[in-house]
Length: 251
Image (cartoon, rainbow, N blue to C red; front, top):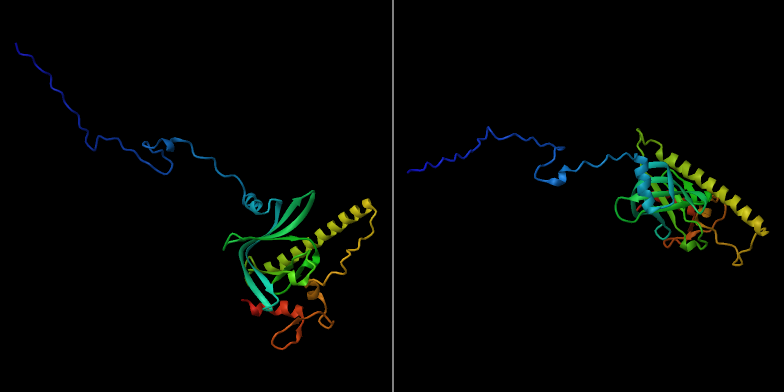
């Protein structure tokens, strides 16, 4: 007796029978289970909030941004060279409002595009600031010995015509005003502190402080002022002239 073995037919789909799968940027890859997860929610923070978040990494007391300049270069004044030298810091400039130890303050920050060192300058007194045609000059406070003082020059980019026209002068005026405001608040705070402790002025005990660099800058040119000796001629030169004309001596 013969047994009939049924034939098994193997189905080979042609290219025309294969299903078509279209993958785009948003379609999950069926071979990659990770792509089946829902996309993360969109970032809803504003540019200002993002900028503040970045600034707080370098200056944690930052609370708000008062003004931004797209590009600025920080120079350091060299008394020995009698001119401005690049400090190696350049990038976006921010004037920020800070809050620390129960008091508001203001600072100038330049986030460096060329390295890891950023420029952070806390405004304390109006006489720290001087504005020239080329630079916004900032002098470090709290250092009585002239040889250790530093003066920084902020060169702020501005166009002859366009959205940044006049930016340098506007930034300089704002920095001056905020330094004046901070000084007034500090004087009021000091007055309250002295009243609480019954103090009417305290002598330092170390004698009068040496005139700071910015004080030399602000003295009239006709007035006798301390001078910086020039090795070539041995004659003194008004420091105000040195800083105001130092734009031609950038190294």
